[in-house]
Length: 77
Image 1 (cartoon, helix red, strand yellow):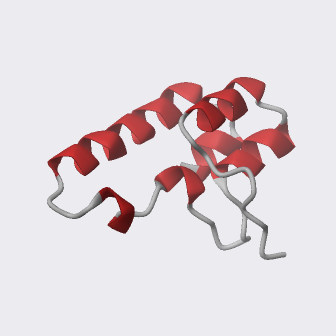
Image 2 (cartoon, helix red, strand yellow):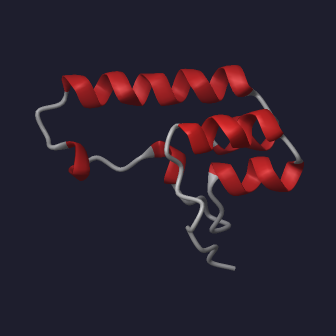
């Protein structure tokens, strides 16, 4: 997800979000127990939203925000 967001690949970002949504539907765990891929933090402490914004990929940023990405996640660096 991070690489797709960092390179502006909206198609892959959508595919990954949709895949997770399908997995959540099929899961017996409560939705709150499953981590959101859109808010995942990489080894650099960055989220896909941060990478897309930093690299200037507005379409990816808009999509992630529309899907509920947390824009208040603080970086670790």
